[in-house]
Length: 313
Image 1 (cartoon, rainbow, N blue to C red):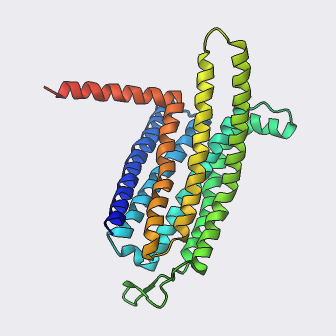
Image 2 (tube, rainbow, N blue to C red; image 1 turned 180 degrees about the horizontal axis):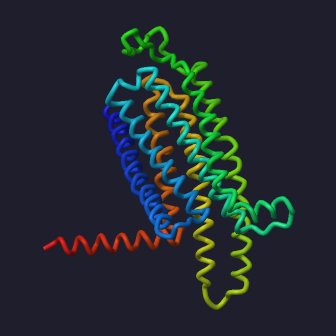
Image 3 (cartoon, one colour; image 1 turned 90 degrees about the vertical axis):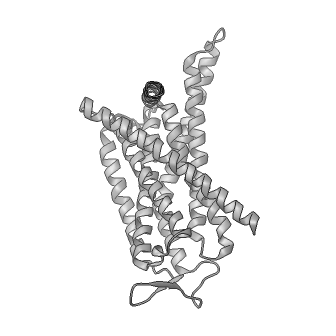
């Protein structure tokens, strides 16, 4: 029992660290791009996607904290109305963040890869102007795939006429039932297309960058071209994105299928750690890869260091 308890405590500590990193990383990305947008009165398509992406992930981290709180510290989420509202919000921001990250890599793919087909060429030329509409469409699609969650019937808990919910031993489930299947179908409906699109665009980006890097290495023999290091960094970031994306996808499916049984506690803890790693670690990767965000972070660290030196006697 002590080993089980230690495992849960360590898992929740890891999730807490991920949430803090996610708050700081995504909040930093949103703040930097928003300030630049206000100052310059204009914004690039990539920065616009980053604002939407980081904001949605910031809200997603809030839902993760609320979910952890509901698991261990309160019974309020056993109210059917609260459970449904929380589930709809979680599914909306989760689907929206997946769409936004997908459009970010679609934009990179359109700008980097050379195409000859007429249709793909038109998309490449018009993708920047299409970004606001793609973001708006993502919000609409995410709403469509998440609002039906309000009509779910959680069978694990029953509510009394006073609004209090207690666990019903006759309905207590050991595996998963029709409500879990309904939630799983909603999750797949909102995640399947952006998942496929992300995998395809990321594979195209990695293939294109690898070919371009090999060509540059053939021409540069005497010294190492800094551009090669940039390409290798981008390739590593895309691979990291795919690993985090797919791991989070599987982990959230396990969370969806989890029940209130005690044997699911380990599965829930591990799934939370894996699912929480994607929005937090990927925000750090975006800061490292993006030159403007990296410069802003260095300036922030310098100002913070100078402030500490001035305060310290």
